[in-house]
Amino acid sequence: MNAPFLLAPMAELSHRPLRELIEGFEKPGSGCDEYFTEMISAGPLLGGGPFERWYMDAGPCPGKVVYQLVGSDPDQLVRAAALLDGRDCLGIDINMGCSAPAIRRTGAGVAWMASADRAASLIARVRPAVKKRLSVKLRIGFEDDFDYLLTFCRRLEGEGTELITVHPRTAGEKFRRSPRWDYVAALRRELHIPVAGNGDIASAAELLRRAGQGPCGRAGPVMVGRAAVRCPWIFAEAKRARAPEAQKTAPDAIDLEEVSLRFLELLAKYQPPEFYISRSRRFFNYFCDNLKWAHHVKTMLNREETPGGIERALRRYFGENPEERHLRRG
Ligand SMILES: Cc1cc2nc3c(=O)[nH]c(=O)nc-3n(C[C@H](O)[C@H](O)[C@H](O)COP(=O)(O)O)c2cc1C
Image (cartoon, rainbow, N blue to C red):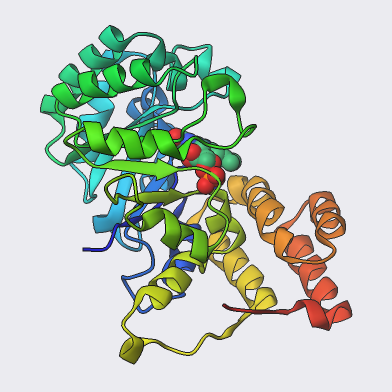
């Protein structure tokens, strides 16, 4: 069986419009195998905040959606996990990897990695509340210490975690240094549950390489974050390359203007107006890296304050730079 492809949880990015876009590059239902949502804060979710229904929208393929929860209070996490588990979804993921200071300071995200006891006791409490798959997403921890990571993962496994995703950088590294993929291979050898690897995959070819069985380890799921925003067709391209010769379809060029406008349409359809500007800026911050004048376009879009303004600016850019419109697929 082929190793599954996972879309990473990314705040303000891993939402329904991006899933719709990714699914649109393949025949329905086959775009990416699992879609992690952006992190959902347990407290506000339970408080029934005004935007929670948008965070919980698992369309267009709820059966492939994994809700990611973030928080520091075990009671809240247990109740929030039970609430989301009752919805149509594939599973629940607990964020123990986010290193953003605002999250870490509250004792959430990667702060859980400071104590294997505390993390294991959380999982022991969440486990009975989740009937679907329970997973955890991690970094290496605070130090570059594989033995600590392994012990930590074994404790989570012992409490019933069914999948662990590792972004193999330490808490302090953010996106510096190369991710230590050899740790992913070593964890796959040591643990009984699947271990997904994540970090710096930039192309469909690299995705396939990481998903393939390496010389030193078992194959396993592979998670992609930023590259799936820059190239929402990355999963489709990798799946086409992996298809038997007879089923291969011819590569098309990607119409970047069409993808941009489609994204804006989906954003307007599936997100509240309050999110429109911040989320389009987030998306285009990565997507524009496909363009020769990426920096100029990002600056131009960041100046726009209305959805109509963003759309007009994109149309103008592609009108003035027609050679930028089509990107050849590999
Ligand atoms: C804008 C942004 C938001 C992120 N938000 C989350 C999040 O909500 N939860 C989480 O576990 N990781 C989050 N991450 C980390 C990603 O899930 C992923 O681990 C990281 O980007 C490395 O993968 P990549 O190199 O494929 O992008 C975020 C990353 C980015 C760039």
